[in-house]
Image (tube, rainbow, N blue to C red; front, side):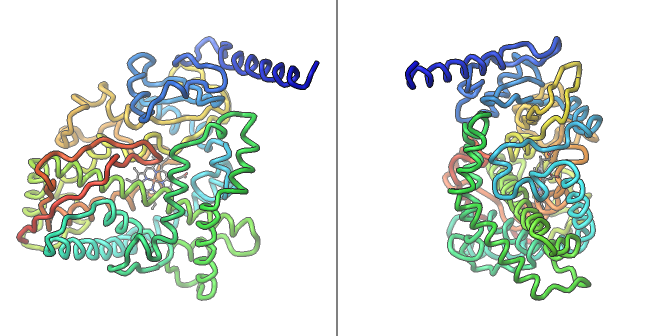
Length: 484
Ligand code: HEM
């Protein structure tokens, strides 16, 4: 046999083996899903907006289905009771993260977001405690200050007759809040986020986000995974730049570290983990990185979507404004304690999170052993994705889900399908930070300005696919000063 024949034979055997692994019946009650092809699995069936394609597929396969992302057996779920059954009732099986090169790369499963097992449990206890400890006063004060900076910039924009570049200023707001929370670092109001301190981190972070959002076929084909990891480790400069940045901050903190004074999350992590070996230092740096990756783009996407929806639905905006104005009764700033008196605004925030989910699939989990969920067999090492789009559009739980209608959240005490922060012991650790951030920011914007589209037309709501779902085109809005 010639070399060429040997190679062709190996390829044929590989393709056949790959096809058999996908077509063979794995269980009597296995999940239904679209027919896969060898190597690609179902990837060829998805267009630019895979979360929407999967939402359409629920009509055929239901709210729990199976797809193959190349070789990765993936369970896509959008039924809240099944999500609860997995993440709450069977949390011992569904708490770990998936293992693949793009997740391993850079931090080697250290920190909060990508870790599993004991490492995660220990880390989550530390960051959970830190969030609770700092939550009450510290977080509120830092958000309050950042809102002042944002509103002051908006006033300057309004009086100069310019329009408000939503993405620029909202990103600056959420980034500055995170810089303060993690590093006790104040970002000056006049800092240009395209050139200053924020850009040093945001530049490489955007690249990491873009690459992760696009995904790579090599990440989900079993035989290419080791090489892909090697490639990422050797050639991905962005992640190295991010970690270098965090390392600088860590070194600066060490010089002035006082265990009795907790200035920020980095201080708390240094105190809890110590500094004795490279592994703990990597855990600290990875945790800081996770908070930037999980806590900035999510909140800024949510705020951008709120500005978008309030501009496109002026009657909803007016109703929310009237409620704030009446509640404040002459005061000139909304505080977190006003939240209970502004149920309509809270409903607007919830409806935006339902109607325009921040992230298509949240953060993937994996199953640590074979199990049955809702009568369906789920094999060990499956990737688990919540399809937030399909969850928010699930007609069993939301009447007329295609309508943007905040009042739906006033009619019922709570809706079991409203899970933007996920559920169970591994749900979003920054949930109350995020809820405070969204409320305090959007309420004060509404109090100060009427938001109008710049040409009188509705702003295009189409999203582009990525780790978060921002609008395809950036948009500016025109600001009309309110009398307060
Ligand atoms: C609108 C804003 C936000 C949304 C919708 C959101 C949503 C989520 C979701 C769905 C998860 C995955 C949970 C799971 O695996 O089931 C998550 C995890 C996480 N979020 Fe958030 N998040 C937001 C803001 C934030 C903020 C502001 C922070 C930090 C202050 C944060 C920090 C984290 C971290 C560290 C994790 C990983 C938790 C773990 O693996 O244990 N998030 N978030």
